[in-house]
Image 1: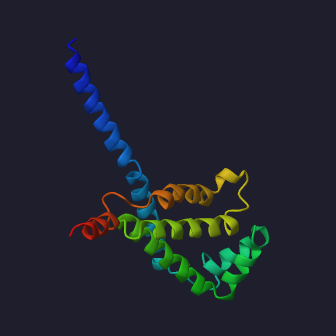
Image 2: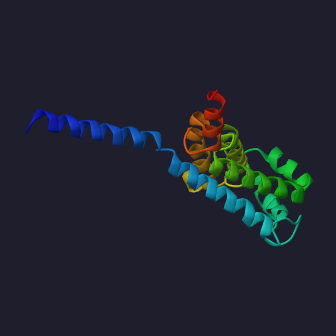
Image 3: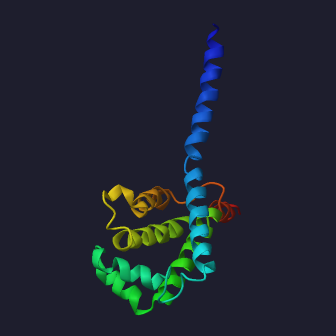
Length: 167
């Protein structure tokens, strides 16, 4: 085999690996963005969720997890205004999802997603046994790479950064 063939093949493989490395967070960004948009829209359109009491309401959910939460004070805070808390979570999830999908203020969106996931883990899913059955901890961990890396590719952040660099 001529030496040039192996070298060309290595360069192509190197380009592919570099491209894969640069785009590796895109599937995670799309998944989290779509999931959080869906969660926010689902809450906003659920006729029962945003009520202070009743079956399927945020108020009932908060009352049911109050005694098993790692931080009952967070639940008490939510119980001061269950409907307001429900709207805050739903709108927060929607904003985080859209920011993540668009790559607009990517680190801020990831921080918001991580904080929402952390608060839900410490309240709603804390009683899950074993701990890995609760999905909020997994979401929290999934937000961390996006919090660290931001949205450097195919994003509003990248577009705005390129515009700032162009004279």
